[in-house]
Length: 499
Ligand SMILES: Cc1cc2nc3c(=O)[nH]c(=O)nc-3n(C[C@H](O)[C@H](O)[C@H](O)COP(=O)(O)OP(=O)(O)OC[C@H]3O[C@@H](n4cnc5c(N)ncnc54)[C@H](O)[C@@H]3O)c2cc1C
Image 1 (cartoon, rainbow, N blue to C red):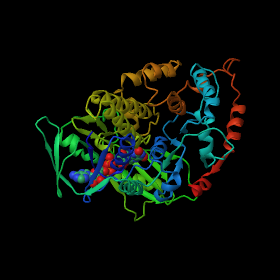
Image 2 (cartoon, rainbow, N blue to C red):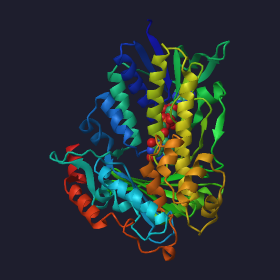
Image 3 (cartoon, rainbow, N blue to C red):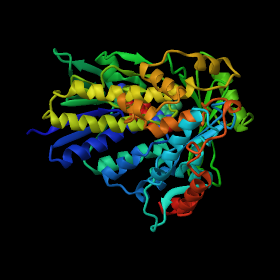
Image 4 (tube, rainbow, N blue to C red):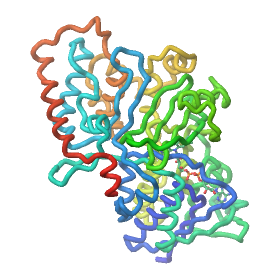
């Protein structure tokens, strides 16, 4: 078979992840591909996107890159999950932790599921997620996910990192691995008679390719502008369309979690890196403007008189109808974005690349499996969207029009309506998630953490003392078990020094 040429346009995180992974996966299986990456030095990358899911660990493992090789030079820290603060005004629900899962949780999560169902049915038992998950305990104590050798259970974790440095690291790795880096601007995209991309016109000449990958960010130069693939806007139930970003000083004791705390018209992320803390206010321009948002951010960070310049970013929230169309695949912001709340964008980048490689190979390097691939990626976008929308829909803040509008918003998918109704009725949402095939996007434990973490239970005045069945799980034993497990884990700084 002739060597296939794959040309990626865009050198942001998505572009370099696509280049390195495709090069690895396709060349490893003896399918000879030449991967080129075209990047315009005039157009900067978005420069945010600094929190990951555990999927990023698999990415580095697939490339054969160890943590000590990349973490230090990308200022990376460990992430055990996300701490949500201020999303609910219900009693004892001002914060909760959404942990990445651990093998230890197999012992304790069933008790959480059981208790949360009992509490929904009116028994006064402990139903807050923070009691039941190892990573919540580790995060509270400032511990890392790295256990000493004698501890046999695995814990999932992600990372925080500097997006610019990660891009540079992957670029250097890519170039060492025979990926051609072409620094030029794509001026025009020329189409063939069948509507596919014929070639790219650049400042350095024409570029032809078997497959073109659009990693041009929100610009969507190939897939949206040239090929006119429709964009499906998510603003009917995801109101945030803007962000304002400020770096702050690094903390002496770096948390092992991302902070997500609410402000008046959105929420504030706090991402601890080794050399700084990244902070950004994600908000809706329907409810506030950029000046007010910046002032609110500065106030909340104690930086009202600081000279540090804030950066304002516009977000296009939604997805394209087809991620692979004709001979073009879109990866990254060009294919869509569901706002940063659960830091899922790079996760989607990886899923898209991996599914594409599998479908391309299975179809003998043709478009044979294109429509199935598009269905899979669209379902993934919609599955994640439902989970993110739920964070806004079930909020109980009543102090601004923004939060009230979110709580009253009834533009919900049928799937989300069914999950929420099942929860409110005190029934088993695990079964519903399985029936709807949604647990592959967010597992039942994540939904339990979200809904129980917001305290969506009967009012405490209506709860009754639990009977013998409802009180079958001994909470002190659970706490003791997890606390003793957590003693096996390294302090965050100790783990960072080793990585
Ligand atoms: C506020 C905010 C917070 C976020 N937080 C997270 C997070 O915590 N976790 C997470 O996973 N994701 C997050 N994301 C998403 C994340 O930033 C992106 O998914 C990631 O950075 C990938 O971006 P990209 O590579 O698609 O686009 P970009 O970084 O915008 O890169 C676009 C590239 O295309 C090139 N280009 C454009 N036009 C041309 C042209 N004509 N010719 C040649 N080259 C061209 C540019 O030079 C650039 O290299 C966040 C996004 C936003 C907006």
